[in-house]
Every structure is written in C-alpha cells, then in structure tokens.
Image (cartoon, rainbow, N blue to C red; front, side, top):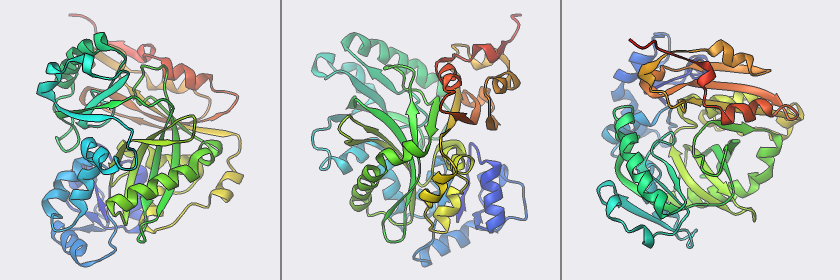
Length: 393
C-alpha cells in the first residue's frame, strides 16, 4: 500500500505502482500529484480498515510529509510512535544510547541555544534541528568563535526555508548538539521484513568537498562500496530493529564508519528511502532492480549476480542544491543542457521548481572509475556557470 505526498513522486515510482497494481491511498495530496485514474486507488477509510485488520500489510510512503496522515489515521497502531523514534533525533539517540554509551549528544530548545556557554561544549560538534530534512540548518562547529557565528546564521536560514516543509518534516523548535564523528559517511536504503530481519537495498558513499561541508551534493554507489561494509551495516541494523521492534518497515539510514569499521548512526528516515525518490530510484539505474518492489514483495537483491554485470562502474546521485549565494528570486533560469554536457553518461535528470524548494534538481549518472573528475568538479561547484541572473530593474 502506497501513501503518496508532496513534494515529489517520480515517474518511475508511479509506473511501479501502476504495473504492479499496488493500492494507492486517495488523499488530497496524492490526487493533486497523480492524475492517472487507472491506478489501484483505495479510499482513506479502506486503507485504515485494511491496516487495522491485515497483520502483515505493507505501507510505503515517498515523503515524510505523510507523517501527519499516519499520526491522524493510524494512531491505533504502533507505527506513529515508531516513526517518531527515528524522526526525532533526540529520541533516536536515546533509543540507541546503550549500544553507543560513549557517544555525546544533548537536546536544546532553539530559544536556549544562545544562552549556552560555548566553553562548556566539546568541539568539534554538529548542531542541527531535532526534526530535520535535507541538511537544512545543519552545521559543523569547530570552536567557540564559530559557535556564535553559526547561531546567527541559523536564524537567517530558518527564515529562508520557513514554509517549505510541514513541521513533521522540519521543526526547529528543538536542536540537537552531538559530537562530530571522524570517518566516511554512507546512506543506506533498507527494510525490515515480516520476521524483523534487515534487507539492504543500496549503500551510497556520501562524498564531501571539505571537512566543513555538510551538504548533500554527491552520493555514489558501486560493487566495492556495497561490499565494503555490508556485513557491519547489517549487524548495526539488527540492533536498531530489535530495539524498535521493527517488522515490515522501510527506511533510509545515514551512518559514519570510522577507521576501525565501527558504525556510528547519524539519523534514520522512517517509512521511505531517500527523499524526492532519489536513492529508491537509484537502485534501478545502478543495479537494474526496483527497490519499491523489493520491499512490497519482500524480496532480496541477488548481489552476486548483480555485481557480475556492474564491475568497474560507479553510479552517482547529484543533488543540485542552490549553493550559489544567489537568492532564488533573483535567478532567471538554470541551464540544464549545459549541465548535461559536463557529464559523459547522464542516466536521468529531474528538474525542480528552485524558487519553491531551493534546489534545481537531481541528476543520476554513470562514471568509470578512471573518470572521477566530473564528480569532483560538480562536488566543488557553486553552480553559477549554469545560472542566469535576472536583469536589474
């Protein structure tokens, strides 16, 4: 069963729903986004009754905007409380603190951040909303001087993205201060099956341009990336699943792995894969299987067979966030054709209303391991070469 909500549902996801006749719930949001009347639409009432009466009914949502619908209509189940365990980063840290006893974190109300004496903090640290999305208002702070600057910047950032997402997705009432983790960052799409066992559907290396970079610009996946820490990731997911009692539950997981192969959780995004149908669709572009079908049919990828045909290939998701320093209201256009010319093998381009969401789009590409320059170039780009600014009046 699918619960579709804003901001975006990909053509690939809608095609998957149609071809498999998966039930899709009729809501104001879903009908406003999907016009195909031939889909297997079911009413909200039927969806609620089915969830109440069918023990192993599977539910997938493309967006955390749907959390409010779940809280309102499925309150009789444990699903809302499970979602909150992960969506609220403070609750998430509390859930796992026994498994990670040396990991420092602290929840603070936004109004009290300015009252904290930075001399009492251990730097470097990460400061971010307890309920957040898309690296909004996320900062790495290296010292007490930077602390004051970051607090000022956060106020401006909150004003700039106000209204983009509902409070279930981004809520800046509370922030979390947590220690900075040395190591490489990875994003994992997975689900827990009816027996509570984790199934890994993709592992993507989140690449940063510098030590201070906290953006979502480039994620890459390959045979080597998936195989490198797959067993450690599965062991970590088992801990999460047991503590939260998860079954029939999809999620998008962000972790760091240190030099000793220790996995430290960053956050978990419940009931979906990567936002904006990114990493969920990426498994098809990269590996030829459909992550949505894998979950809804309770299947597992045959990685050995898949990797036989994917040797020496690197597949990447590029998030075209507006880091240009140019306000969206002053931008006339973004040159997508020029962008595509900078990549040898684009697989899919998705344009986004940048004036509404402060992101120009998403690009899926294939590169050979010998041709990483195009990835390095876009990773460090401020995108201004693709931007046309409005003429001053």
